[in-house]
Amino acid sequence: MRPFSFVCGLAALALAGCASAPPDPPVSLINSLSFDNPMSGKRDGLRSAWPVHSLTGSSEHFPLAQLRQCDAAGNCSWGVLRAQRSFGTVRAVDGGVSLELDLMVDVDRSQHAATPQQNGSMTIPANVGALQARQHVQRALFLPYGKVETITLDFGVRFDLCAFRLDAARQPTDQCDLPYF
Image (cartoon, rainbow, N blue to C red):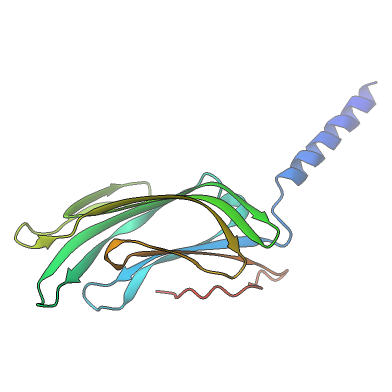
């Protein structure tokens, strides 16, 4: 009786391992938060790629950044951008990736960030016009492989997502048209 229970235990472990194994082929997800750099006017931001099998329940805090918006007369207001994205369930499915996105973007005169990755603050001087907006985006999304999903936010801030598959040499087989910064 004992050898039978040992074999059943091994079978259960093998099945559990199969249930949590990364998809075949491996799938990754790019997320990018971008905005116009207030000094150069060029597009700036942060882009990162993650294996899909490790994203469920993950969060990413983006570094603090400054934004600027000017009117036709040349009067400019400034703001400090703080952003965070979290994923609920993320999984590779036929033709793409299914995910639950929670994106929080806060633009204000002053921001403080205290996370394991960063600890800092920025403040726009009191004699300068300040930008202010808070946005909370919660969406269930399906991302077809190689197609960029864009979420447009206030003050020219953009959040882009794109899923792609990798071949045996860990090279992308799908093209995600997202810029590097």
